[in-house]
Image (cartoon, rainbow, N blue to C red):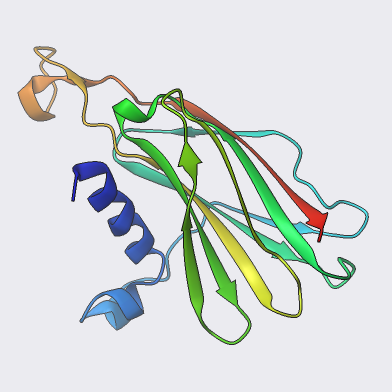
Length: 168
């Protein structure tokens, strides 16, 4: 497993430490970034921007409102920095029956990508979009406490996302 994959798995585990770690029940409740409810009249987020520092995750929870009727699919589009610098994303579908499905977002080399998952309210409680900056790139010799006394090259990296609940 490469570092980006391992760090992504770590970020996913930290969203539910009570099931991921033997001593997880002692962990504090994880802080989830934004929580967005999609409704019948506002079925999309519009384009939003988050900034990620190196070795960080940016989770966004998307929930279907009761006014979002019928069979729905959540379409997520991303524009992230290049994947060669350690950027990736995953969708975690939390179903009403208590199960969770994991869906990696396929990204191009330039960081653009999209994915679709079930978003039908009767089956899905929420979907977490987990955006990951697993960059370890540093400019060395700046007298910091980081490795090689460097500065992180991928701090404040912008990530654009758009999520829409579409029919069908």
